[in-house]
Length: 85
Image (cartoon, rainbow, N blue to C red; front, top):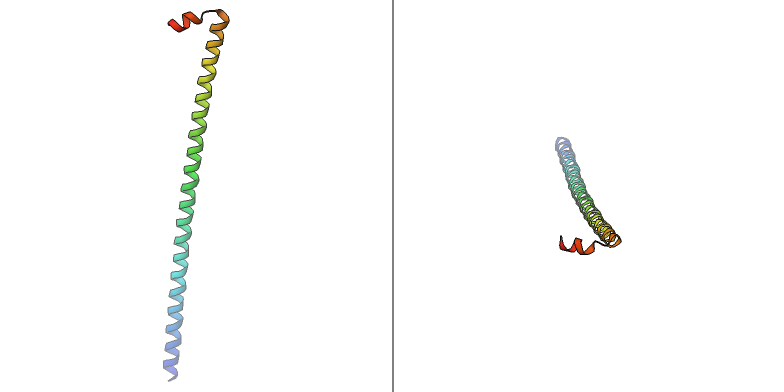
């Protein structure tokens, strides 16, 4: 009877150890998946922000260049020449 009780206790301890190991592995997998998803979202947001900033800078530079050209043309009185060319 004592041998059976010891065997049951050892078996239960082994099962508990396996369950705890499986839980730890599952938690680690979930943590890795969450970290990967968060990093993917962060990288995507950073890329979108960089693209938007670059587009805005390019638009501002083009507008400034056009304004400078038009102002110079108006100042020199050669706007008609600018329009024909």
